[in-house]
Length: 361
Image (tube, rainbow, N blue to C red; front, side, top):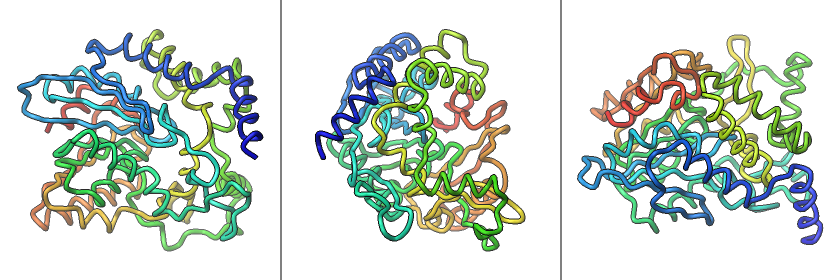
């Protein structure tokens, strides 16, 4: 069985023209070209992390940046130099199973079975809590080893959800939690439609989702040439304002982290689920944060931010964020909700200056 896994990995690398060395080289090329500050420290296992040394006399100690689903640490390239002016350390990391971090296989990865019984030998059939711990626990070990506490933890999209799960489980390490366009806040609508009532298109989406078909798998199937071309096209569509040189570097990096060994990407199904109701349609957390965040430790300051053109800002996400903030404020805790102007879901790239100002606020 082990030989079969090794053969599958070899064939994937041959078909996609990608491997771990090329992934790390693309990461290094991007950071060297697009960030003025030199890398001070690199760690590659099990979590891939890059540290930059900032102002030794800065007011703030450490900022830790956590990426979202389908991206990696390099997506924060526009924020590093500005943050270094106000932090002594700025650290970017890849979640376990994503980016350049270790990618556990088979039953060690957070894959959810079709039913209560696993649908293949390799399925771990993780519960949502176990899937969250798959990411949160290695982060805690790493922060302890690096002696990082009193940190400002920034998480984007699914990274915002996981950063919140971390802060709820290990509040002693975090001074401020910033959730940038987070997924997973609202409760699932009580009038969610059963699968039998969905349209054929939505039923197809539900089928693909529940059988663990991920966007990354589709890119792998395309192979090297078509895959690269489609990744660049998708990136330019989502972030059209990037200069050509930056877009090409980021697309090369995104391609390699996309076609790498499948692992953490299966959290798409183990943590989230697509839901449709008569009023709304979207992706909801299997274990939402709406009630959990009201128990956030009083020592942690919470800031939730969306872009003004952010699709995640739509109902009911912003309403849930507003209610969470209101409840914490009633308890005299530091919490606020903000909108970044001229920004979509990738607000840290769309308006880096305003994004950084919220991290520092």
